[in-house]
Image (cartoon, rainbow over the protein chains, first blue to last red):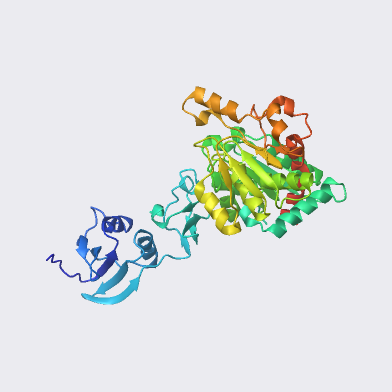
Length: 143
Length: 295
């Protein structure tokens, strides 16, 4: 049994698609210089008999914008905000209708990759369409 | 109002612009935009689009200021954003072309004055699409149920994607013929199918025997690693006078121009060749567009 300490104040991202936990940490900007404790558990058993990834991040409260990015990687993930070692708030990540300032257009010839401008996408046909170059992408292609 | 993408226009709005073009073309109407200034900002080369925007503006009584990237402060490293924000202060509307996709949309979001997209990379060229639809409607009296064959490099030509969208909107039957590897993006065709129910026929061999409209575009040699292969494919897809014997008598041939050698020169004087007429319709059509965005 894998035992991981509880965290006092921070965020637990649960039910991450197996193998995507590292990517979640990456998009949250958790790297080698992050000064607090971080746990990444990959391919752990879930209640439904499947596997999932979990990340526990001390000292960081994930807000809705960050949750939107996680939704792009793993639409079924849940966010648990921890304060005083207790779950203060729990919410599911959801793919929003519109993304603003989140994600990067994968089209190398899109103007947003050469000009300093806010990225914008809207949900369309099961994916996301770049507001600028009008190309359609799968959600996970944006991160 | 801006005109950035054919997606921004519904069928009614397109018909309104085409009807106005008809009236201008017939000399029944002449938009009066005197006292206004159009800035043409072409960051990429253009003959027809730039000159016809300038000519259309002048015919509406406008004055024109022209931006040339070669002699501008872009050479000193000025950004695209700073450049368009500056030029906005010198004009009442901007017609622009830029190699980056989404550049016109970005300009329209940032600027208060109307922006008309004259081509943004491989994305959109809405006034060309309107000219194409106008030429077809003018020549055939309708667009619905016509068999339209698009022939050439359908992967890279920006005019072709927006044309498929426009043709689907008006209920034409579309056949796409492209060399292997230069076919139109499947995702785009799926989208048009879902939106308009357009079932596109596709093929890799030139065949336009049942076409009412043959729309040809260039196959550029630089798309091929092997120059011999490029030559072979260009020759195979070249429209030749002899091939037209098997085509419908009232077939019309369109091309966004510039054409290099994809249509035999001997076809230019045939009644089927409508591509120079198509280019000339750029004037009344762009007059109608300027009147629409500045009204």
